[in-house]
Length: 398
Image (spheres, rainbow, N blue to C red):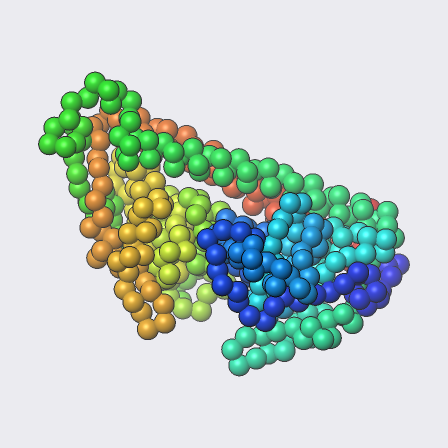
């Protein structure tokens, strides 16, 4: 493989780290980009961003202001996280974050981004990681001298185009999933919060509720699943959902690892079970499972009673429910935890049979489409990840 090799500083216009402190958090303004905003598969997730005020923005961008095409990365705590700054982004780097500004005359930025996911680069990071008592880190003072390999410009572009094609399809599917989730949330709010369900205009109100409706609590529409498997009894290579796999503010659990990762007892879950992240419930990690497997014991697993799966899913994934759980959680020694005894008492409206069945059909159609798109994305990501090392090693010529 006739690829050039040089220090990363020779193909970049600059390498910058962020401030070594945390600014005052504002309600809105410029984004304060943190490690939690970068997904393991290399994308920016700005759905739960923190902000700094416009007044503070100049102070926190003295070192560098991120611009489109920059590659941001983590250099401490969780390593090997990379993402490209998109057009229109306005923000600053947070703690433990740095960025690379590629020199496009020397290397294609998109190629360099994908190179950071190669075995060769991951090996370089592993060789240079400083193991700390609390967190691992990359010494940024040495980072500019880390070696990178790259082919001629034509091959760089070809490799980037191949891998980008997969990512573009995944991104488009993800946008569709987000729109479908928003549609489900609007439907639930319209029918069960605003009480504007089909036929509401002509439905009499009896004792404060639409006729045929009843008020109950969460525990009466689902069962709490606490079936535990000891580590020694866990089969190999079955799906594993840890809190690290659960997205924030989504209703579908599209990511999972395998049981080979686990070192302790885990809960069993089934397809369509609804899993709620117990630790720091305000992180809003809750969704339905696409498969059967094992889950972290730091989660609460709910199995819907017959005929109310959609109602259960949309209730426990709502902002109102998550806020309720956050306010009633147990204060642990290190972090708050959701309290099932409080969760199960959450009030829920059960509509008349006809309305309930219509709602379940509508939610079922939406979640079936979400599942299809999510599984398609997983297949695309797996295909991309199989291709990447072959392209980066020269095993597959382009």
